[in-house]
Amino acid sequence: MKGKTPVVRRTRNRFSVNAMSAISTRGRMHFMVFTEAFDATVMCRFLARIVGHFDHKVHLIVDRHSVH
Image 1: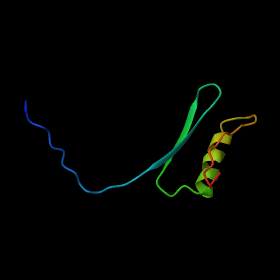
Image 2 (image 1 turned 90 degrees about the vertical axis):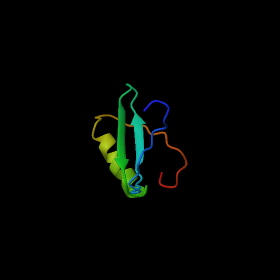
Image 3 (image 1 turned 30 degrees about the horizontal axis):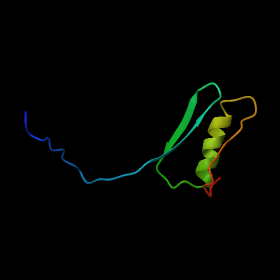
Image 4 (image 1 turned 90 degrees about the horizontal axis):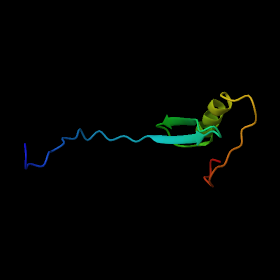
């Protein structure tokens, strides 16, 4: 209704997701969404997915996260 603030009901079922992405030199974006903690296993799974898309060297620029 006009003049009334809408109320959004919540289910109180909270969840979180994590995401990581990479952009190729041609502007193509590769990403992965995951719900588990970010650890070396997840990083290796992401890298394996990226490498599978290319038939040449892949150069990575990463931040100083302990998993890297």
